[in-house]
Amino acid sequence: MSTANAAASVQWSSRLGFILASAGSAIGLGAIWKFPFWAGANGGGAFILPYVVFTLTTGLVLLMAEIAIGRRGRGSAVSAMRRIGGRPFAFLGAFAVLTSFLILAYYCVVGGWCVAYLAQSLTVGVVRENAQTLRNDFREIVSTGWINIAWLFSFLSLTALTVGCGIEKGIERVSKLLMPMLFVMMLAVIIRGLTLDGAMEGVKYLLSFRPEDLSPGAILSAMGYTFFSLSLGAGILITYGTYLPKRADIPAASLWVALLSIQASLLAGLMVMPAVFAFGVAPDAGPGLVFITLPMIFAHIPGGSIFAAIFYVCLLVAALTSSVSLLEVVVAFLHNEWRLSRSTATIVSFVLLFFLGSLSALSFGELSEFTLLGRNFFDFFDFVCTNFMMPVGGLAVAALMTWKAWPAMREELTSAKPLSSGMLSAIRVVLGVLAPILVLTTMYQGLFL
Image (cartoon, rainbow, N blue to C red; front, top):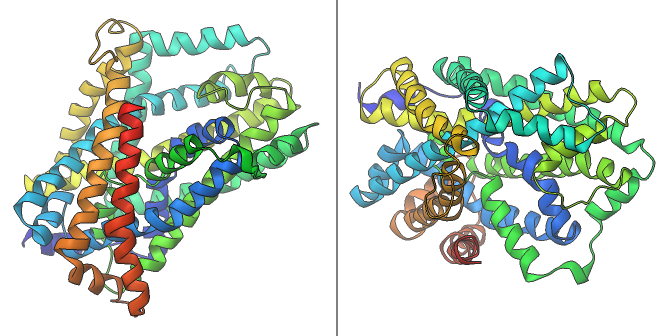
């Protein structure tokens, strides 16, 4: 059986499974970890409005293009782009696989911190009233090499176990279970947070649009977050699109993924911002909100230990759904290009990622003095992937499906339901003109500003 036929024989068992798995790839730590403080630092509604606009325009058409490449090409990101665009685009597909691999190398470190905090919240507890104690607790996990590596190993094992079970029994089953659970738990934390005195000020700050806050910086940040939040340019939706049956409606499925991503980000903001305002914490306090500031806030809430545990379950679920999608890109490549079985490809990926991830885990301790371009391993991988590799992948997708293979793109978009010529022309303009401009602007911002 050829790799194309092999890929076609493995499919999502339902449209819902594909949508939830794809949404899970987008709804990662970025939604819960980055969105609240990015919105807080950029004026709340003045950041959210352009983010929603960019997601439902540029982000949406790039989602459709990646899924169309996968379903049309049937294979890994490399083989799918090769079949559609030829050898030059196969190289760009390999670039996307490398991007997912490098992202996972540092993402699993943060995933390990999520496991650590969840384990502590269920045992000794993580809520503390003293900020310095919380900083010391976090520093002990992060800077103590063997502890950090142990938590990395636990999170990477959960990821590999899910991917190793396959599409229907592993990724789809886990997504159907964890994604609804994530939204329910987020709502539980939100409801509790809204009962706090002063919480509504946080809601007003987050959702109110103040024209004076709509700065170029807020718009640029919204562009960057759109690209980051949808996991564009890393081959994830190309790989997931491979398992999508021909009867599936790509535009409708892509819209659902975009809407769920927006919903998760807004829920994350509502989960964090009311409590931040209720206790007088700066809304732009940064990533420390998750592991340092919030446990202190939970300490002042009746039943805070329970809600802290729920919050860290949310964080772990978000991290796991994204890491699974990243690993699937790598495993699909090894399976299609190197002819490894899924189990062997998963084990090989696990070993390589554990080694590279350990370098990232040691970046805050034993290897903190070793730098690349002035950054430790963790920050270097994050900087290169976010600001260079993912945007390059997005440009490759836009170029391939607009200028090289538009007939294939048009056919994939209309295979389940016809679209008007005006709608198709609009999609092509956004994909071929607007998307590259925004991606290049985002890249420039990340690399030089």
